[in-house]
Image (cartoon, rainbow, N blue to C red; front, side, top):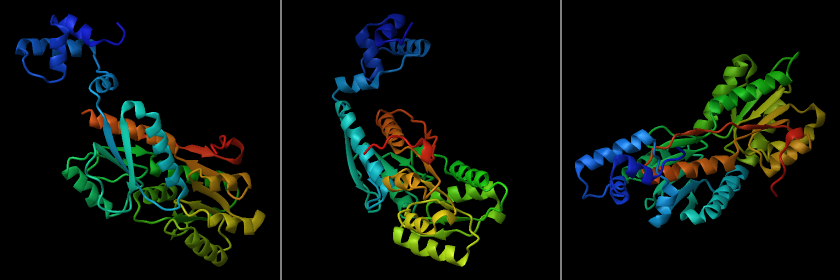
Length: 327
C-alpha cells in the first residue's frame, strides 16, 4: 500500500468514513470500541494525516511573528528577505508573517508561534519565557536560547568554530599560527560557541585574546586596526560576527601582507571581498534554508505536532566556488 488514506483507516477499522473522521478530529458521538478500532487501524497502517489538505478544507490560517534585529546588518537583512519570500510562496497555505524588531520589547503575544532570530542577550531570555507563559510557542533561529522554546534551527556553532580553526591550520602549514578572533559580543551564545570551537581546534597557544566590536563596522575598523598595528605578528583573523565592512578596507590597505581571513555569512560585501582577494573563506549558514525549516517547524507546532530541531550544514565558500549572485 502507498500512503494510507482515511478511507483505508475506516475500511480496516470496520467503520464508516465519517466515524473515522470524527475520531481523528476528536469529535464526540463515537462508541469507545469504535474509537479503539480506528486508533488501532491508524497505528497498524502508519496513517499520517495530510495537514495541508485538512487545513485547506477547514480554511485554517496561520499567524506567525518573526523577531529579527533591525539595522543595517547584511545577514539579518537576508533573513528578512527570505521570510518575505517564503510568505509569498506560502500564501496559498494561508500563512501570514509579521516581521518585528527583535531588539525591542515587548514581543508579540497574538500569534500561533514566534521565531526569535539571532537572539542571545539576557534581555530576551525572560521575554521568551513570557511568550511561553502566554502559550505562544517559540522557535529560535541562528542562535539558540536554553529554556522556553520548542525548537532550534541553525548551524552547530561550536562545529563552525572548529571548522574555522581547521581552515587556519591548513593555511598556516609550515609556519607559526597566531590568530586573532573578533567577536560581536561575548553575550551572544552563537559567538561564544564559535569562539569555543576555534579554541578547541587551534589550542590557546595559537589563539590571541578576542576583541569585541559590537557587530559595528566603525568599531571593527578602529579596534582591529589598532590590534594589527600593535601586533604585526598576527597571521590570521577569525571574524565571528558582523561588522565586516570595517574589516575589508583594512585588508585592502595591507595588500599582499594581510593575514589569512575567515569570516561568517555570504553578504554582498563579503562576496565582493572574496572576489577581490581581500578575504579568504566565508562560512555561510544558508539563511534561505534556515527560514524554510523554521516555518516548517512553526506550522508543525501550530498543528499540534512536535517538531524536530534542524541542524543546518553550513557552506564553505572560496573565491572559486561562489554561487550565482541572486542580485
